[in-house]
Length: 269
Image 1 (cartoon, rainbow, N blue to C red):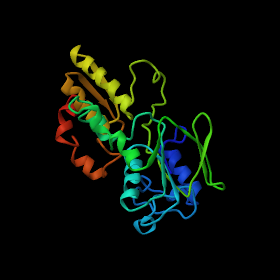
Image 2: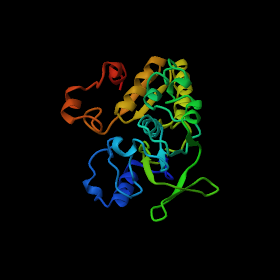
Image 3: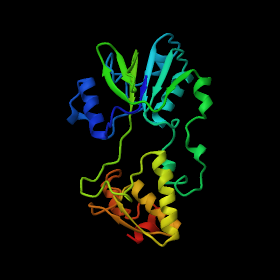
Image 4: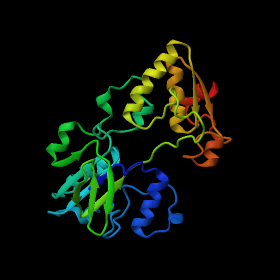
């Protein structure tokens, strides 16, 4: 089973959950949780995706994927390509079919790519490959002893033989007054990008001003998009260099604009 989102699982809580499920010390988990190379954790719920040797020719087992977009959809695809013929269930809290997130801050945000282009597979692909897809469902409980997952408002319970947690992460919310006001936006989901496209177009049309909190890759890509729409942009970043959270510090220091594409946006920050 592939699992998408457990309540509001953040990267920090995902690491904590991984540690509890595997018995590893959370302090030993450095960087992003490994996927898809993450090896199965025995009989633990964290499960991971079985290796080629384990999936080839297996029949009858149930694999549940709790997934968030690309990772879960590609895991399901790989299982079928490697000959797994058992039951595969994907559960996610979004109502859209699994999609790729990079275009949300790039071509799709700029209006240069169509909405359908972001999806990992066409909707009919899942039924064609016998993948059970449950959209708009949130996992509320994992029972490791009973090897079951509970999800949905009606408390649907399904059993798994292997469980893959591919929840992704959520953007950090600023813990300051006013972040719940109208006009404050986050970019993580397709619906966010759709809303932001309209915001950027309006800012460009009205010579508006956009303030971006965070000079990481996504923040700078949004800044570049806003500049293309014609908006003024200010990027606020507590670190002395840009892209420090996702890049080697020495590289970030020697590449202040991160990419040529974001240079014009950074220059106006």
